[in-house]
Image (tube, rainbow, N blue to C red; front, side, top):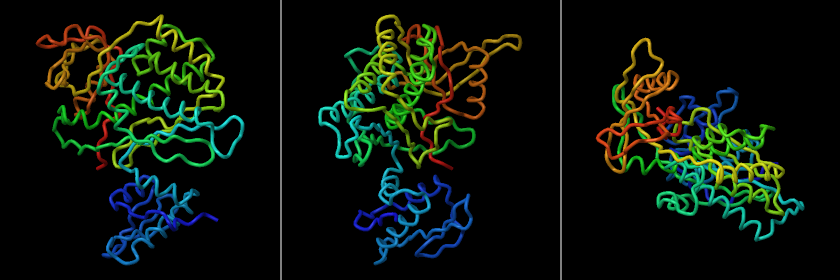
Length: 387
């Protein structure tokens, strides 16, 4: 029998609860009064739930508990899990999950738990470093913005069973851009959405590291390592992950990502990455190679396409991109290959944000120019509020 939610804090935000319901395939049926709404699930038309609306009603808490009980029954999870998701609808949640190798159901040794928690903190800091600048090895000196990110995220409550460290990162969703309007480009806006970018970099870098360090049986080539750095992988990140996998009493590491319900879901978003203990030596080797063999440092800029220029017979094209350097809006010049230029053309037509990583000749020039562009793509992690 599914446990009751009785005794839990049933204080919820109705906007967040509606976002949770829509994410899980529920839609309003159209039947509504001042006290409740009826919602049905798209995939199973016979399922319906009652969403209480009158927060001042004497039975509001009881009806919310009944709602959590109904949802937990439909979804096959505990009511506490439903409530935890409802309370974090505005957050990206990353869960680091491991098992105790000796099978203890009472917990794990304190020193091993400390390694896991401290390791997750360092991974967040390193992802923040790579969000600002792609580097094969960041070293001990980290930007203030990256260090402050570890203070922005929160650690949620651990759960019984496999040891789970939930990292909760707040997301402030932006309003959609109207037809013909340029996307917002402002220092304060960039600072607000930095947390989402960091979690995106963490997801992309761990997924790429899994590709070259777990899924592929081949030793990664120099070109593969360089390409991994442009995604966000760094030697520091590899060595930290290897250290976590090598903690004696801990088992395999699973990292899952649940993106904020109140922002559009990233396209092709990473959901889960699995790192077995036996991958430790390969990941450590990749980290050592990135620290010793690869010297790559690239600027990362976010913005939107301002203009395009390409002759019909040319494969390459030139674009100008409006971005922020420091606190000032600047135009930068990029020469793109045909595939990148196609992305730029789409971004210009639909007024979509883009991200570029590469080498900049002189950022203090009147119009800085990228001498090499290694990555140019749509900004997958811009947290736009759903229409």
